[in-house]
Every structure is written in structure tokens, then in C-alpha cells.
Image (cartoon, rainbow, N blue to C red; front, side):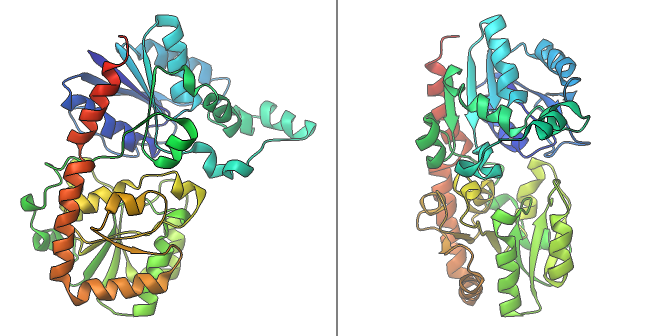
Length: 385
């Protein structure tokens, strides 16, 4: 059977979950392709070479209608699997479902409206603003995934033949089958990598490394780690950011204020990430307590867990449940507590690494690609194809 994963924007963060789902489906011996729009200049995440990707140039309305028609022609999977309830993924896939009578799964790894105020969001423009939004070349409503359209698509979630979600928040709001972000624990296996060699490779040998292996954004709490480093003021500590943010100049603003603590590494393919994470002494995932963070499963938690690294995170959303008792937790928005935990970890790094190995065992049991495959196989078995 062939599965077509439909992605709203291959230059955006949603492609990370799509690539993970593709790896899971390959585990189940399905033929897999990723088909999506590309609204930016490049892929957000470099996909593995064995997963075919079809990228269609993303455009605003009215040109988007031509792009959508082109993408619809490319969707030939026996099963459609839309990633995110957006018009550019779920919306297009619904059209294909109706026209071809093919079954459709929907995956949600985020609450899209949380980025716009969540429960407090509304769109009530005056007449003049509405005209500008829909008639001017760069008007808001020309964008295919405007939040108004996303809110409409959320009301159609029950039109999918199945729903997978990755947080308790999303399950409470939309239902669906819990499919948490897993990790390829064979690829992310610390026994295959030499930490000292990785530190030498990336120019990190002279430092004690805290690593945030993702794209910083305000809700991810990287500022709290940097403030903790200010409190500690120990010259051999560094925060390594991998990839950086493709969305705005947030990285530059962090570097402008805290540049002495930051080392930035370029983005790299998924297959290279374990070698990068191997260089860390501690993996930090310091989420702040926002509606955005509560609706998310931080992918980088399982990076650290799978690589048996001490993981320092916050009591936000599902994080305490994900880590169990195998990591270090602090209250959100609390740089002082982060500083204290960093000192505690480095005071007995051997004990911290032992806890990291327990985190890996937990990851293998609950948050591996194999565990995801077992769950997803049952979801697909319940769909008439």
C-alpha cells in the first residue's frame, strides 16, 4: 500500500513531524511519499534520501488554486495522511478524499490557533480592513493558511477517517489516538558515537555544553537558560543552538544580548543529528508555560533521552509525564532554578549520565519509532482501504 503524506509547508516546522511519520510508515513496510507546498526558499528539515519528496511552489490566492490543482494531481496514495488541519494539507486532502473516495487520516501535533491567542482569538475586521485583507495583493486573507481558514478546517476534523495527536491537550480538545513523537533509537544510539570526537568536530572541546537542538522561539524558554548562564557566570559554559529559527530574526536578537554564551551550529540532516547531540553534556528543553507550549510535544526531549543525555526541562504540559523520573525538572520562567540544576548536574556528571541512560530506556519503551509503528498499525487497520 502507498501512503501520501500531505504537508502544508515543507519550509516550515510541520515537515519535521511528517518526516517522522514517513519513517514510521516505512517501518510498517508501506510505500511512502511526502507531497507538500514550499512557501519558503528551502526545506525546513532535510529529509532522508530514501523518502521521496514532491514539492509544489506555494503561492497566495488566487494563484494558490493552480498550485493546489497541481498538488492534487500528485496525490496517488491508497491512503492520504494530512499533517496539520490546514487548508494547504487537510483541506486539499479532503478534496482528494471526496473526489477519489480514498481514506484520509489527519495528524495534529500542535494547536494552530494557539499561535494567535488560542481561546481568546477572533477575527472581526471592520468593512475597510476586510476589503484590504481580501483585495490587496498582500492582504491577510490572500494567505491560504490564514487563521480564519484554519478555524474552519478545525470544525471538519471529524470528516477524516482517523485522527492521530501527540499531546493530552490535543486529545482533550479534538479526540483521536495518542501517537507521541518517537525517535529512531537505533539511529539515536549513544554507543555508536564518541562524545569527545563530536565536540572536537564542532569546535566545542573547550566547553561544557548545554544544547538546544532546534529552532528557538519565545515560548521555548531559551532566554531563561541564557539568564541562568548570566547568574552562573562560568566562562566554560556554552549554549549550543542547532539550526536556528527560519521564521524571523529571533536568533540574532538572542546573540545580540547573550552572544558570549551562544554557539550556533547550522541545520543538518536528521541522520546527522545524533552525532551533533552526542557533543552535549546536557540537553535543555526549557519550555515556558504558554498555551502554545502546552499543546506541543517537544521533539527535542526525545533527542536527549534517546542519546542518554541528562535532560533539563520544565513542568509544562506533558513534559513531566514524558520524562517520568529520568530527567531534571524546574518551574517554567525560572532562570534561578535552571542555574541551580546546571550546577547540580555538573557537580556529579556521572550520576546525571546514569539518569540519562534510564531516560533512554524509557524512550525505547514509550517514545520510539517502533512504539509509534505499533500504534499506527492499529489505527490503519481500523480504516477501510
